[in-house]
Length: 211
Ligand SMILES: [Zn+2]
Ligand SMILES: [Zn+2]
Image (tube, protein in one colour):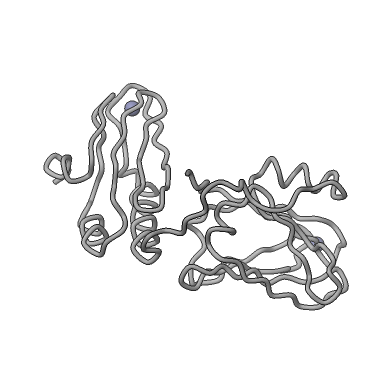
């Protein structure tokens, strides 16, 4: 089961009465609130994560504050879900995959609820998983995750107990376990990940060349 790292949130704005799209990486959302600003200038919400729960603070179209809390499995995996303001049951926005959210906004009467419906296991150890993802994101941001092939293009697939770095050009992959505290420590010590072209390795196996 693959978790998409990009999420799209469409939120209605009480200031301009428009719909503003926000795209963010799940790596950007942590205990520090990730601000959501409308193009009209109004700060119409924020997203944050506490443990494995995600909180969206937003406004109803009438300008009332709305707080919505979702478990990680829903927030991270839903193909499309609608954000329902609890007092009147109004839909104030959508969260999910970019394509599905855009479609839902353009025909907002015929959106679908819910997620993919496949196995919805939580991460085995959310704290370790988030720490591993945060570390990988930082390395990626510094250009320290690369593949030695001609056209490196490294992406990440997330599973309940591990992540896999995959180069979409040559198909090489590195499996990084992320379910036990020592996995987190191992990743914390990494300074760089260089993938061999067309190879399949686990992080344990390729630790040597990394140092
Ligand atoms: Zn606005
Ligand atoms: Zn490659």
